[in-house]
Length: 283
Image 1: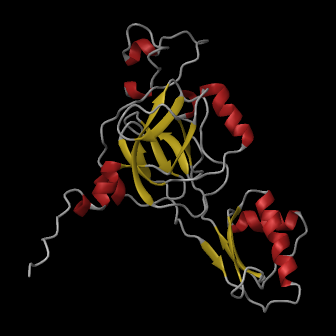
Image 2 (image 1 turned 180 degrees about the horizontal axis):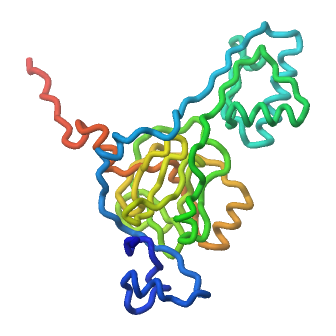
Image 3 (image 1 turned 30 degrees about the vertical axis):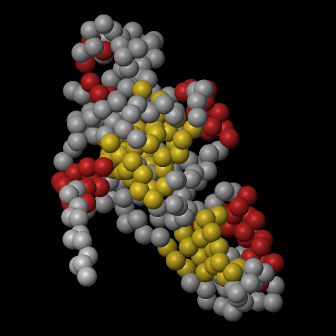
C-alpha cells in the first residue's frame, strides 16, 4: 500500500486521514497530493544502481572548410534554432564579433535535429561543429505520479549553460502544486524546474524528483535540497498560464535541477564535516 505521503491533501482528505479512509473519498472529488517532508532514503544504495541512460552529449566535428558564405549560413541556422527555443550557444571563428559561426550547441538530440532538418528540406552544413543534448529516458511525469498533481512546472526546452553557485533550499508539494524557495522555511513561491527533471513515486510511496537523462533519483520532495544557480529556464507562455491558473497567483521561482542535500553529501562525504585548514605559520 502506498505511503500516506502520496495520498490526498489535508484540505481534501476526510477527517480520518489514514490511507484506507482517504481511498474511500467520493469518486468525483478531485484529490491532489501533499508532501511537505519525507524521510531520507538510502542514497548510498541508490547511487550504486546503474543509470538508465548514458547522459552523454554528442559532438559532431566540422568536416569541411569554411565556405565563402559561411557568415550568412551560420546566421540563418542561429535564427532557426533561436526561433524554436533550442539554441544553447554558438562560437565564432576569428577574434572579433563579426566572424562566421564555427560551432553551435543545440537543445536537441542528434535524432531530433536530423528529423527537423529533413522535414524542412534543409542541408546541414558540415563546416560547423554541432553539439547535441543527451536523450531523455524518462517521461516528464510518471503514470503513478500524474494523478497527484495539477500541473508539472518544468521547462519544455533543454537546459544550456547555467550558473553554478551552490544554493540551498526546499521544494514542497501542497494540494497538487509544487512550491520552492531558498532557505529552510516553508516555500511560498511556485517552483519551476529544468526540463531534465521529472516527477515519479518511489517504492515506498513518496514523490521523488528524477533525472530524466540518467533515470537516477535526485530527491524526495520535502527533503532539504541543493541546486546550482541562480538557475535559468525557458518558461513557455502557455505553460506559465497553466501554472498560474492551477496554482496561482504567485511568483514563479526557477529552482532548476534540485538534489537532496543528503544525496549530495553521500557523494562528497568530505563536505559533511569539512576540515578547517591550520593557520599560516607566524613570523
